[in-house]
Image (cartoon, rainbow, N blue to C red; front, side):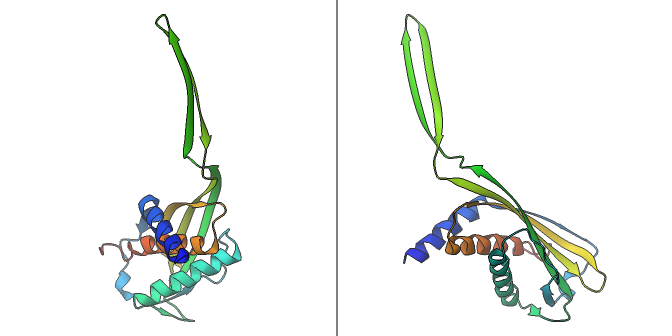
Length: 173
């Protein structure tokens, strides 16, 4: 039950906050692509565990859309991330003030709450294997707690990759 509530909360937070931008070659017929595999040498900048999570989630979502994972694919999928860590933007405000004789004085400050946040930009590239050309790219911005559990990370990547794939193929809603 706790696992389910954690995933639900992370999905809710990510679905509201993540944004996805897409770019693609408008001269490509995306309906011809039916098979995929991951780029042979992915250097994502993430941990091996996160790479594995992303690949498992992407496999599940691609196969659920009718794509076949193949040793001789039409599309290579590449992904990489850029991350920076910042303090939570949530703060607790404290203020002290006083006034007298039409003169006011005030002091206030904010104390960060919620720990540090990983600001992540995850990029997914779709590369046409026969032409060795990038044909579609999505860039998703999201936030994840620095000390996220494996379940929270899995829920985060699931939500991000689902949002990315909602924009593929281009022109389809």
